[in-house]
Length: 187
Image 1: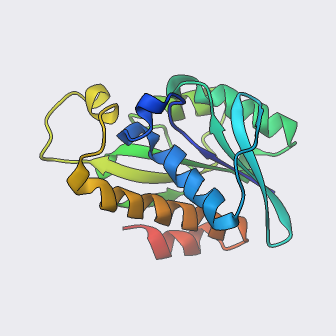
Image 2: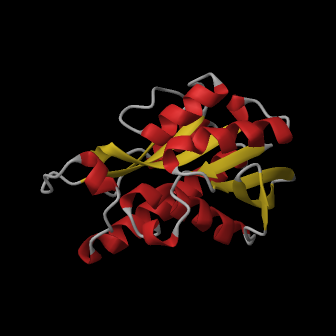
Image 3: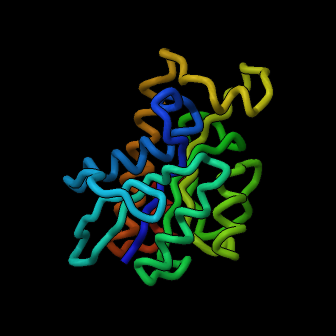
């Protein structure tokens, strides 16, 4: 069983911001699996899918980004899962826009939502799928950038990246090794 969590901010005003790439990507995964976020539990909207005969939980925390770890910790406890059963999708300012990077573990980098997840669950050992948002042509503070809306000319690039992140998460949930998925998707 896997729990796939897309990080973001719950209010509609943040929907099209860079910081909501994880929300968009987990929504794409739900669409590909034919499920909807119907219930609210563990401070998250949750959808349940069957992937290769295994239950998969998809979640969008309703906490703000900086408190995402609370929902993740509650979901792991409720579904009796280990951090190794967790896949987190999120935006990452440290990699170029439109690319995705998959890692089996690692630090939070500059991402406060990931700092929250690591602090709450007590480990860095879980799968993460990072959606690159860095644009070297933009020179504003990171906090202002991540909360700004994706520019119209970049929209298709980010929609494609979120779709790839969703596809990668589903492949891992189907039992493909992280190493093989990394080889296929990492830019």
